[in-house]
Length: 433
Image 1 (cartoon, rainbow, N blue to C red):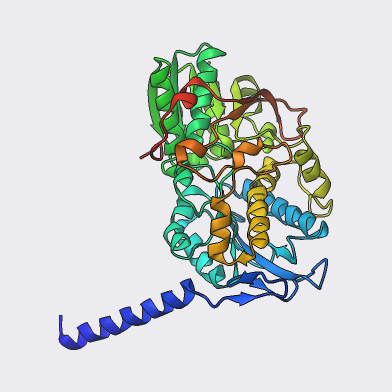
Image 2 (image 1 turned 120 degrees about the vertical axis):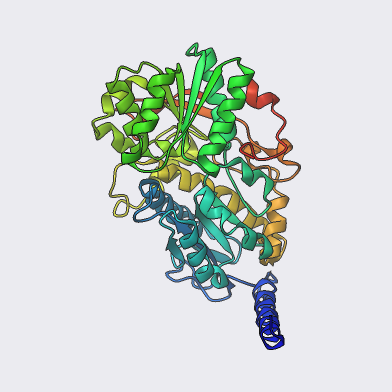
């Protein structure tokens, strides 16, 4: 390397470092109420403010909105979060501030590179992320979230999030959810053998790891079947299922892939039972050719009860959805988007009460949360964010059965429970690692 080239690289590196410092250590201001803030908070009102005398907290959303495998969930998740914060603002906001989640909404197309690019676009303008959809996509920005003290609410449930202070997750993770599903299969369905059919990566591998751990705990034979996204890519997975003939299958894919797998296996005489992890189900599948197979063979696990359940939070969600916006049929993307917003609301309130609405102040508020009021959609203790991951991880999940008369095609069969595998498991690292 030449001296001139070395000097040039050194100058570029130094300039990048200066820019990084300027981004990560922004100027602190103070509002009229004595609350200090830095990025993504203004004394000026939000666009379309309910109360123009209040300042504005801007939160960004990065979701799968057009062409990725989870767009059927991403769109309602995003709309429900808009409805959640509209309800908060109408009820008086957070102290002397209202919250905007509409100005900085970006589409990641479920692509980690795209996620990183659109995150960089909105990062200078938001206090935190009301939504960052996807495990591999969120992992692509995790380093910068930590460097910037920026809180992100994940639209995903990988067990890795329990080890990250900047991630504000709700509900159990894919690993414990799958453990509980296998325990349910062993006890209720009398399953002796189990397979995991799953996407590769933080989502599917995490669910498969929980499936394998519970299979070992129950003395069950385990078969691992990774499969690529895409309806057209499921032929090999179906053939492997037919060859293995497991009593129980834990599916961790997108909805269209799940319909192809369940329908294809049933068409070939497969008799095993399927339980799909959280993002696998969509009520539209009951209008697909796979509907009879799904009705006969499929259950849905989840971190909370589906849309239309009788809790104050579920009722508030249904009331808050603008009829003009709520054009599609009920969808548990709405349920998820609503539930995920409660911890951010609690953390913002705590930060405002502490007079520190900086990114660092919001992070400190998150770490101090011991409970969150989910209005009955989750137990309050699910909102514990202090202590070790093993101490604070929420281990309970729900099993629902296909019911075409239910709003989202599934109805709770077994309410919140923690299986013996999840109860005893020492949680010291992400399950898939």
